[in-house]
Length: 544
Image (tube, rainbow, N blue to C red; front, side, top):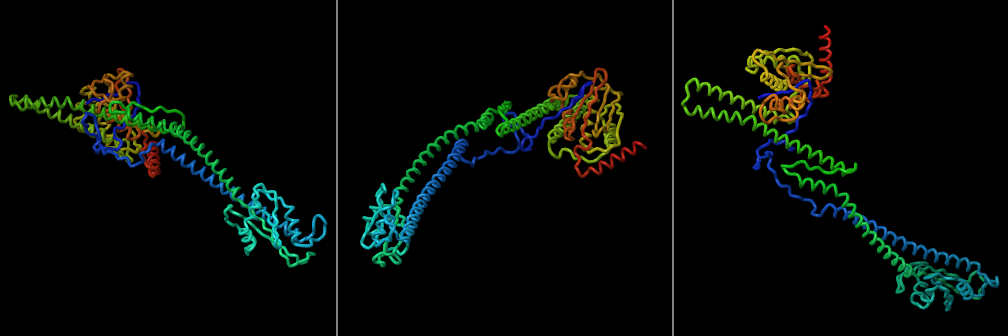
């Protein structure tokens, strides 16, 4: 297989993640695509069958309704409390005024003491102006006096209800609340006698009864409550309408996500969600678009992977089938049979190498693809050169180490070896027997680099730029744009070390392929002291 990267141009690239979202290996799908080995189980929805818009509207309406109901109930309670407080305050005021009036015992008109309790009670009651619902009743002996002036004639109502009046007078409590046929009645009473006054009969007792019928006021409060409920219902309907419109606007990006998801198929993953604004929903759309980018990239990588495997395996498979058929015929001479057997063995080796490369690519995005350790860049370079020289990889070419470094870097020697063997094999394809291929490494400014240099014809700048951009699925010619499996392996190893693959070439200057990565890009924080010691040792060694 052939790898080529190009000319006086250095191209830094990133490979596409070919893992499935769940990390499962790929297998052929019935439609000719790929699917993961994990069975696709239908997800049964266990959530609400009500749409999100209706749920938003429902929660807003329910919350608003509960709030309005709480406000209405609170307002009714406040109004009822105010009615009771106003009634109690009026009753207390009247009782205090009567007690003061009775204690003085003077007629306001004559400025003389009252001569009887009847006169005192009559004079006091006559001077009162009851408010609506208020009844002021004076009782002295057999006489009952009623204050007039209330619009609802509450005093006459109490005066004519002898049973209620006697119940109040005879009640041992001085105040209380009764439920009557006229509604709730709040009352209080005060007693006065003629002792210590100039009345003719000091033993005569008088009672002042002050009552307040709160039924009418409570009915008015209830009417206000009903009006408030009607206004709240109208506001609730308006809130529901506004909530529906707002929910529709909020759900628009969600609908766009759903519609975009419906448009996505295995043949077209290009659909994206329009992004408007910078709010949370816009961020959601951007996140989904980024996810779709990853899905599309993964899908394209899978297609490239399968196409690359097909391209590299189909020709050796066809040639191997021809060789097997020729060998099976039994009509070949001994020399021809030996040649065909050797050719078949070579094809099997090519297919094995291709499968090994595919396996590396399939594992390249797994978290454990590289097992880095502190290793001397120079020692790794020397080991690679020794392995290449001791195998058939060079095919008559000479391999020379042109530069190296004793500095340690955090890397996986096995994966670096895989990448450099691919680059050496690539250089062999474009050089002749007896030519020299240079292998080098260096650590400069915290960046470790490995490269392979040949002195072939070189590549044009545009060829070099396009070489690392995509898989090459047809042919292996140097002029063909795109990379084959070998360069894909190199690129995967570089990026697994958080680095990149690059190419430098020029017409008539040969081509140099390499990888570069941070010397401690993958190193754990705990290795910092060891790295510092290694760097100091390397520096002191260089100075000596």
